[in-house]
Every structure is written in structure tokens, then in C-alpha cells.
Image: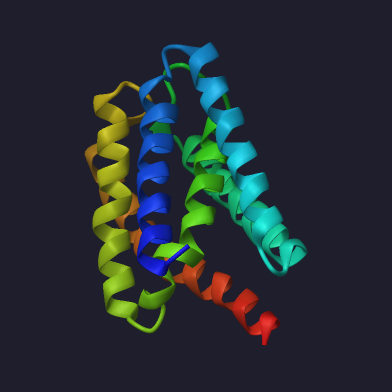
Length: 173
């Protein structure tokens, strides 16, 4: 598959997965079906990867760290998940992070050398995703100042995630 076609497939499937997980938060059966589809898609992704074990470690570690990242916001009281009140982020958020991890190598690898662009993507993209999630009733950012905390955290997280993913590229050489 050509590079442009592969990136297009990842963008389309990534958006469908995000909208499915976040948009169906009020319909758990549909949301779980979408989550299973994403996990199966991740399995195919790993199976097709030339160094499948390293890729499995990369995406599962990113998904777990991302879910813990989200759980910190819950514990600190910055965000609430109305459908899943608790002390940690809901399971679907781990699947959303798995989806994000799948996209880091294919879609964002070329941006790894451009720290400023990654920071800007984090500052804008992170809070924008939370805002879209709020509009769909999946999440609630508690206080206005929490948006600033989230933006700063994402400004650090996006470049860090890309740097971490690039370590696995070095393992391939």
C-alpha cells in the first residue's frame, strides 16, 4: 500500500474510531462493539508489522500510559466522565489511546523533528478533542482553568509520545 493511501486509511479509520467511541458513550453495547473492532484492527496492524513484538510493546505501552494520563485528570478532579463516575478513566479511553498509538508512527512520524509544530498540535489538539467530547456528553472539564492545565499537559505529551515512538524506529536499524 502506498504511503499516501496508508495514511489516508489511518486518518479515516482513526476518525471513525474516535467518533464511534466518544459518540456512542450513551450506548454501551455499540461502544463496546466499536472498541472490539479497534482492538481487532490493532491486532491486524501488529500482525502486519515487520517487528511485530516491538510494535505490540509500543502501542500497548502508549495505550496504558495514555489511560493512566487520563486517570490522573480524573483523580485530580479536572475532568469527569458522566457515564462512568469513578476514580479512573473509563475503559473506552484506553481503547481511544490505543487508536492514537496506532496513528503515531504512520501519521506523525514526519513531524518528529519539528518540536514547535508538535507543541502547537498538543496545545490545540488536546483541548479540542476534550471540547468535542464535552459536546457529545462523553466528558466534562470541571473548571475553566482546567483547560489551561490540559493544554500545557498536551503540549508536553505530544512531543514526548512522538519521541518515545521514535525509540522503536531506532530499534529497527
